[in-house]
Picture 1: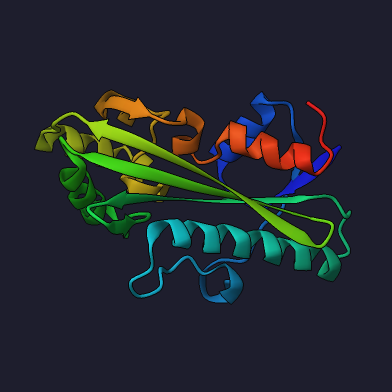
Picture 2: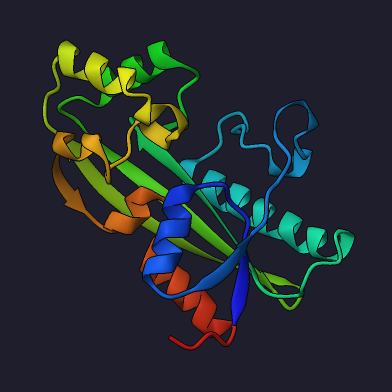
Length: 200
C-alpha cells in the first residue's frame, strides 16, 4: 500500500519512512501561481484549532481533486498543517530573520501550544485528527537567538523553530507528541491510515 503525501516537508517524509509508510510526494504550486485552496492565511479572529483543521482538510481535499486532474494513482492523500498558539494568537512561519528573532523572544521562558492537524482523503471523504502539545522554553539570550536564526533553520518552520534540530536545546518541557511538534504526529496519522485499511 502507498499514499500520496501532500507536503514538501522533509520532516514529514522522514517520519513516514520511520513508521514504514510508502508514499509518493504530491507538490502544490507556490508563489504567484499558488492554489488558492491551500492558502494558509488565518481568517480574522480564527481559533487556532479551527485554523489547523481548515488548512489540513483543504490540502487533503485539494490533493483529492489533483488525483483526477493529473490522472494519478488513486491512493489516499495525506496532508498536515502545524501552527503555534501563544497567548491566544496563531504563530505560523516567520516572514524573515527579523520576524524569526521576534517570535523566539516572545517564546523565551514561556509556554506555548503546538497544534498539528492531519487529514486523509480516501474514497471521496476526508477524515481529520488533531495533536496538541504543550512546549515550555527556557529563557533564551539574544546571542543564542541571533546565532540560531543565522543558521537558517527556523525560517521555514511554524513558530520559528524545529525541535528536532538545534532548537531542541531551548525546550525545557514537552507534554504531548514529539512527532506532532515536528509536524506529523505518528499516533493520529496511524489511526487515520488504519481506518482507511492500512496494516502496520
